[in-house]
Image (cartoon, rainbow over all chains, first blue to last red):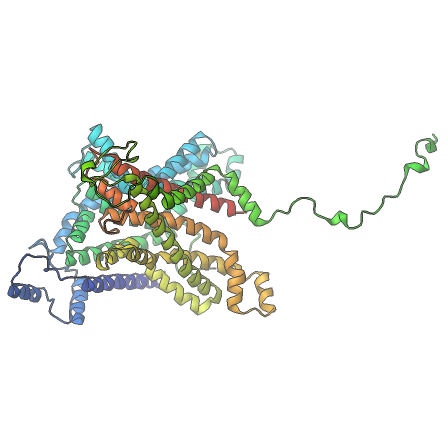
Length: 310
Length: 308
């Protein structure tokens, strides 16, 4: 177990180093310096700016400085919004994204599992068709289109929800729905397929045959065994919610991390892009690792750390 | 009782031997492929998907020529017009014909989807088949590289590349296939690991086939099913990514139109001129649905257990 953890942790670190190095060199390659867009900047001031930000150093020195500052988790100052450190930006906006993301994950999981279970229990009947239509709809409609439509219909036309901003719980409903719809559809399909498979298992037939209430069969036998593919989808789910938030937060004007990321991309704010990318990568890698561990914990058949059998 | 009355000698006659006709198979043979096609045709939703894809492909070739307008000419006296006999899908804020732009955009969106999927296919199949077939240390190193790359979030890399490289179709396709092939490689490897122990592979080896021949003649054709399914499901992902990037403003540069850039252009005027957003958004959804149901149908049809 410890060996497995160390190994996984090593991979994770390697992935992380690759991504931050890639970010660094790509940003170095990017056309134009960070101050080229400034109007008529006198040569001396530009020189001075380059010097303060260490941009005149040879690349290996800059790279070493960069790695060192990441290790200390001091991401430096934003090039564009003066006086703001990247750490400040992350500390301020991440909690907002966290609330939104958590809500979206909750919706995706609960609705997705529910739809999948209904579809499987009423296999090839009307409820199944309804559930699967919702699922196909969810997979086909990209989150940003759904978000626009939701905003247009429910906020602008019907006025049931606030149009944008992030102030109260009602402000979070539409964006969370838009974020969660596509993963919800995936989960519904996963759940339905695996439920159908489990329903044919002998132990389920046995449980029914001995006269167990169907409610008990569903909760004790079916759900617990069929949920595994959904658990393994949790990693990709976090990724989808996170990347989805880039656009959704922008559409709904929510000052979360995705919004900041997009702003730094449009402003070509290289330090902010590098810092937030590093933060995102850590977030994703850690959550994928956690899901893997959780998987082994929930399903005793999977021995974490044992050599996998092919 | 006298049996002779019932059975005279004439009642019994030797049957003429039907020569070798007995062994002949009367009905047409059902191969695996014909089974798959039959099961696929029974799936109405998947057939609908095929029809949609074919129609969209045809329209993307001929569509821009039908309306008589090109996709880039501005006509500012005629901007933001709703759909009419003149402009079937209306015009956008610069007075460009949305009908022509939609089908022109279909070209770009479909091209990106298919090109990215094909690159994934080539790299993924070669990587996965090599790792799976040779096994052992080769497999371990190759898959370790894939695992590490897999940990890198796909969209982050694509976004970073799109910021740095000059915007354009090629950049987008390169960015997408940089980590996109890993999924395909994993699937092919898993399949090859299973198949390489089969008797027919052993037989081929006994008869003197070399490794490359075995891979090309036996292993890859036998993994065609899962490869095809993955391929069909990669296309909508790529189309989605393209639309997503264009929406972020990192898409193909103007005046090129893709469904993603068209939707993002339509967004600001949604309240007043909803059709500018509606048409490209609708077709993004339609094409994603079509490829998804075809992929589902294929994976159901290819599954011999046929559970549905």
